[in-house]
Length: 411
Image (cartoon, rainbow, N blue to C red; front, side, top):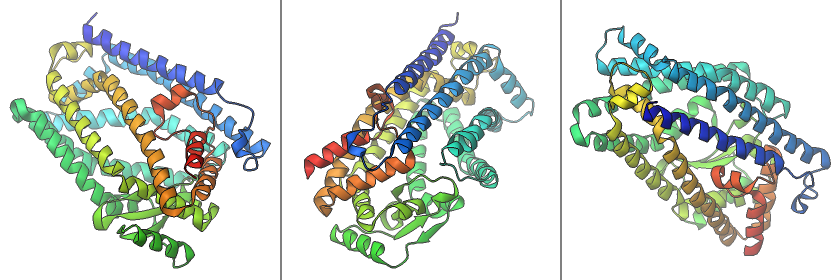
């Protein structure tokens, strides 16, 4: 057997087995006894419902993975990539347009395969537990808008990457890295004012106690903001959320309208202070730098596998090409990506503790922050007792009980 084929199949199977183990441990770790910290927040039925949601979503994810694994392996070993490549070449375009056709068709095929899963997850699993508010019209429009943005933004970026690898020589990966970095930075400024409004309506927060409290706190912390907005998150979900977006004069504070309905002014200010803690402690900048370095690492390794004959033989593809090299390399890079994600999550969980500490020290609202976290868990049907392995591999935030314990230690 071709070494690369053996390696890729091993990566796919071992990745599935790891996800399987995490899913089974997650199901086994569900504790039917309500944690004492949440006594008075949950009643018996609400807590049971949150655990039923964890079971349903975990089992559905496991089912999806179990179906996708043989489909992916079958597509590889049966020559699916070669059939798609031959089809793209039959148009008679040059290398870069052919690459765009090949990649676009592959993404479209993947999207069509995942569409039934997305529909079931949104309208059945999420709907069953009252989390979904997405209409069929909104669901379809989201897909159309996503495809439009992929063509408008992703197409030219991919074409530029293919061009650099075709003409850039040994330093092509460096040019690609720089282009992606510039693109990422530009998007940080454009997303809040151009892209995000395509999917949601952002309304300036009305004058009142909340806006005054936020403005006073931001002024106290010497934190310049472009505006405070509410977002119609309720058009898709009943989940609660709040976030900062953008940089410099484009920086905005955004509250989901669902969050506004559930929390007091003090709880919202405490959650805002947590988010501000990320900025003040430079967590956003650090994670961005880490992401930039990871992208550079990816491109530098990718350069070693461009038009590798043995790699193409593993996928049964007859013609060597730069565009197919990008796709095939993604299979090899998966373990590295997962490892870097685990390391990143370790830092991210630590940053959450630091942001909580900042919120407490600057507002004195530790108890309000705890109350806000509890309401978030209640509304989002969060799993209160995740397995440690799941936390280590997948959680960017610490489990809520650990966060509450750390907050109480600060009081």
